Length: 273
Image (cartoon, rainbow, N blue to C red; front, side, top):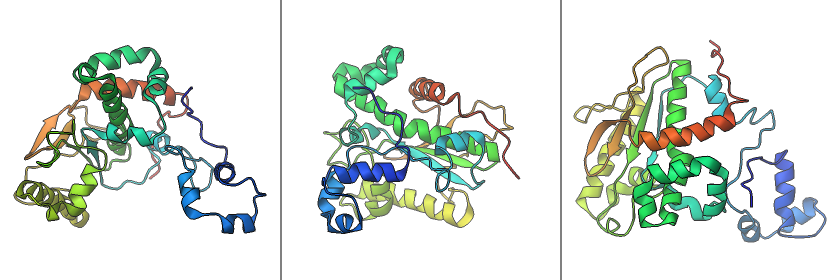
């Protein structure tokens, strides 16, 4: 099965298809009001593609950012070390995703050799998660330079003591879990990680920069006018540290695939004042 990379023509078309999975009745207001909510929610399969309707969404968000059409606001982007934990609910199989990568799949297996040595499933999941979330984070953060807005990147590779022996990395959603409820964790180590993360987010909301007094200075990404090859990330493990080029070889390879798809649409333009 080929990976569907084309969104429905409209939100109406997507909704019509969704309702048809639940009932064969004529689709009208009466039918919609009588649908079982749980059945309707259960009919959603996998991830949904953005529906570009020219009004609520004028273009694919990544393309707009590449063009410099976004608002110039300070931004924090990032992800976790095992975002691929979410792959089973994506409705995308390892075979389908590998076929989509085409000739680049051999290079993926090379740069993710340590994961593929454990199992093909782990290798594909790790690469899938990096492509979906960490490539996106780095691209979006760098694109903020087009509008002269600061952006900061983070990479969470922390697991609480209970999950450390069973998971191959921080799963999808771990950042949100730590940020919003980590202060209530049973162990002091996780509480400390959460308190630092929360302090950064609160300071960012107050000042526009995630650098509270007493914590490791977290540098923003270089702006568009900065020729420096700097690639700073805040790496969040048991402790925090700033590192250059986090999993850069992997992200560079996956970014090549993304840019090849985007090339016909994403020619950068000067942002409007």
